[in-house]
Image (cartoon, rainbow, N blue to C red; front, side):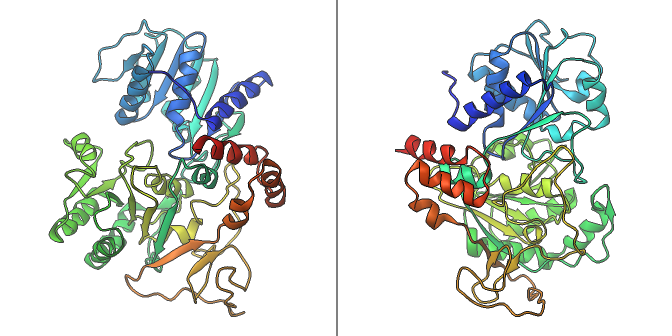
Length: 443
């Protein structure tokens, strides 16, 4: 198969080259979920000089990477208990948990590629990385750990690709349509390790009324669209699957140790309508059929939120939008998935705010969500001066709309007009060229 890159992927590769030439040895490439990170680092592995070691942390990612390398004619070995080792190939794909006990068996790498690089500061990863004094390349959609801290201990620079909004404009991702209720009462749930304590969180959300509302709103707003429900625990996933099944949908729970997990994931959109996941489909899982994300797991982690929402944004034939049913209130904690985010190796800078403060304004007339101001830019309704909380109506989902500045962008047909928008809105340099070239590509 001929291996070609999209324009923005070529730009990312060139920017990485320039970064290495500038003296950096460990950049992390940031590309949104669905932008083709595996394609990019497969291309790099194919054209790299010397030995390449690709590190992954789950068997699904190992197989996914292996499939891409095979499709593009790259011979490689797999280091995992389920595979016979072939240490003689210059490219090796390794489960980090297996490699840590086999480091003396492989040829010393000249380049280490770390998939889902936000895990790279963990103990096992550091033991592997610290054993080799070679160049590194991290790839991730969210360059921060669950607790929000950055990756500066492992990487020395960031190379950012296009944003989610830019990829939607280019036609490579699907625009989300988000519905959100009032937030679930989490007042008694403690935090642990940068997120809600799982056992307490499960008790707060694993309730028939919450799941019943999830089923009813799926029927109302996304009936028949292949969906993944993000759950807190295995029991929670099983309970959600049971209620969807009782409502007449073909639903299955899936989790890391499930004996039929591969079969279940492959049948989504065919024999199965809804997959209820516990810690399995939040990152790195390529299932383009997913058109609806049902969020039943509140999280303090912006990275986890973006990884989960991103599962539904991949383009798929016949689908013009992605449906997000956010029963967990995550969009009100972390903002829209299309918001522009500035990443640093120290982590994303967090604004000081009170606990559970809603970080977006929501019009109480048309329900549009916007960044700031009293006047709704969508309908002109004037918000009251006194702070108001969104009315809490059990199970009531309200569409969340972000006022996108698309009208003027769509009318800007020349490159110079797009560059003017780039300057006015403070977009990163190169945005105008990506949009302009993407339009030509689609013609």
